[in-house]
Image 1 (cartoon, helix red, strand yellow):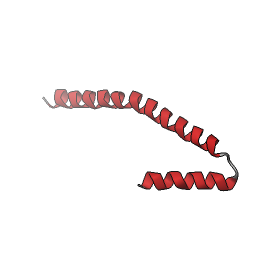
Image 2: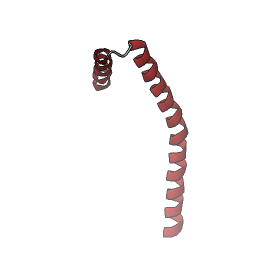
Image 3: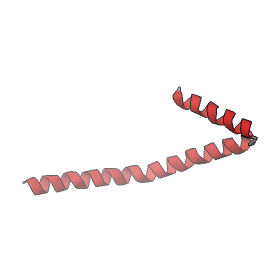
Image 4: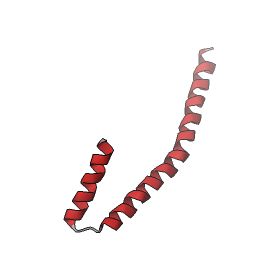
Amino acid sequence: MLSLLCLIFILWLCWKMGVALWRVLIFLIGVGLAFALISSLVLPLLAICALGGLAWAVITNS
């Protein structure tokens, strides 16, 4: 619900500033696609780092 309110606020703000709505929508879609791409690359790297840290902790404590 909060994200929907933020989206409505961003659209209203851009409309008041005179920015075309199609430019705002294209920008928001681009940001969403970039976030999806980056998260699909970063999350596996974070999981590998977590497993490496866990393995390091097990090796150094035994």
